[in-house]
Length: 363
Image 1 (tube, helix red, strand yellow):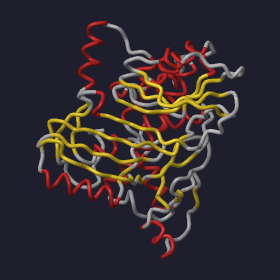
Image 2 (cartoon, rainbow, N blue to C red):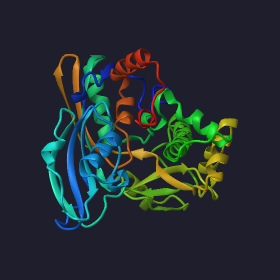
Image 3 (tube, rainbow, N blue to C red):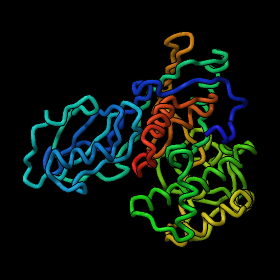
Image 4 (cartoon, rainbow, N blue to C red):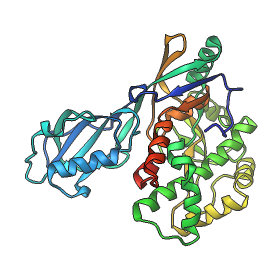
């Protein structure tokens, strides 16, 4: 993230995040109410310092069902305290004792029955509470920057989690496109990383030009809270008013097969940002994989944004984000925030002298 441009000026602070798992708290916002009937057991689970995939495997063992019988709406950070929903397919509606699941890393908050399997992406968003420690920087300037972000929004970056440990997913995607065979679960992860890298390139170009939240000629607009897009069409007072109240946002491509919809200046910028050798290889690989052209909003607006100083050098920031958006994008606009948990990971890796697992890379 530190290599990406900033939207609102120079970095204002240095700090550490995830000094302890409680410094990074995420609560999933469900997209629906359970029906109370059916053969899918919905479990609201709080996990600490645990991988979502590992928890899903644990649930499958507990229920005595195949791993494909357990589902979740989205993956949550490992080095954190997170609350999320899982579904377990139990056709006979007989669940083992929930107390058997309790541990230092897993606590069941609620359980209820539902008539459908929990689908990926079936969440309304996520609430975050982040604690930055060892903060160095001018408090007044930091608070002003937070107010600007709350009012104006910020660039909708794909966060570093999408790119794997040390950013290795994009090079691995290029190797896959060149013919290297990978497992099915790795393939999906690498395709997502390749798409995300291309999107971030376009967004970086627009941040550098200062037009990430304004209209270019030939713009493709995305409706807020939706994947629906429209345009291009000439800028008008109506579009300007909708842009100003965050009803619509400029967008950039999620690469795949098909013609770019943008025209004019917007199309020229996208072409230029994705014209180098690596970008062309990523584009070709995604097209060969059969992904279709889609769009993603360039702008992200946190809601319910608040902050407080817990000590002179300890800052707590809380906010909610839509699905698919990254809390690290918010931290990026403040300055250089170091992930303290990485030191722990590096120490373990050196001690074990083992390569990272696919699950670790996905985090």
